[in-house]
Length: 422
Image 1 (cartoon, rainbow, N blue to C red):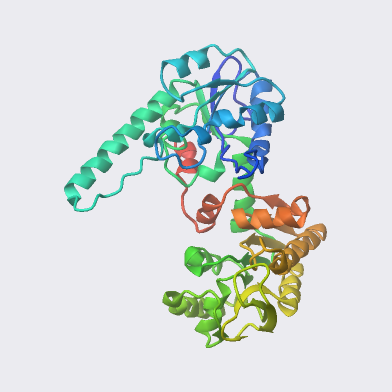
Image 2: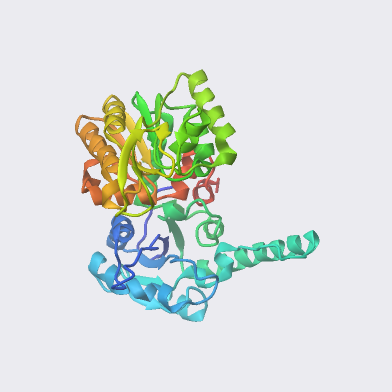
């Protein structure tokens, strides 16, 4: 079964390419603040164009709620896309309908067309919420109707192409019309793009065949967001580092004093279960031993240092301190494969970024020494970029939720749709 673009003959064919151009904008200038999602799609775009494919780019942007929203129009990024690709890109004001099909059929070999935001149509996401007071029967009927509408929308999208290439890993965990349902209309001509293949290969390496020791670094605010992932990782890793706000739930679960630090009281038992599982599996679970505390959640807060389990009343931990940085860095340097998701503190505030940047530096160092390092998740990637070490790790994933769900062992709809037997 052919799942890649390697051997496919694109000459003269309209190639529906699902990309992830959901880029962020600077709220002050209105300009793209990070164009990496566009850049990461360039190899696939340029290769298909060079092989004579007639490219039709489809993407989502933001959350327009199923209706046109001017500031979420893909026309807003058209110039940036043209500049990065290095050639003219035509644009259509809708992603389905006569105009879109006509524009796709006017393309010549190597030319490129970008269609409007697929999420201007509610059928792409296919979300249906139960209304207050609505009967279960009515709700189920509306869900079934939306499912059929999704198929119809996917069929209309498919009219703009002769084959389908999915290169949008960041949207692979959603069963959207433009990532999943559309694939069924190309039973003999659906495949992954270069970026999607890279993402799958990087995650499969960490999941299935890593060079050991394998270390996972988990950070961020809430343990509730990552319970399933941590539990899954405990089946595979040799070491797991837990930092950020979520660490305080583990500290309190062990009887520590955490002051006003973030804590999910309802997950204290879960934290104890994960600690017990790590011990039973022989996994070294490392928590911070000290912290930088603040008297308020602000960059100009007064600060103090304490042991992690002795946070003074009225203070909150916003970063790990020197001993924790050294402890975590040593664990990273001893590992041959490292996966990082989530910061160690409130890195957006410069005074509380040292712990997170120490992790980035340790990753860069161990990569230079021959280890394989994978970084994923919006905050982790932002922190890595802020540290100036983005190019010093082995791989940076474009997926947040998609990456986490893949690592949890879930079958992502956008990937399954391509891999299904034809």
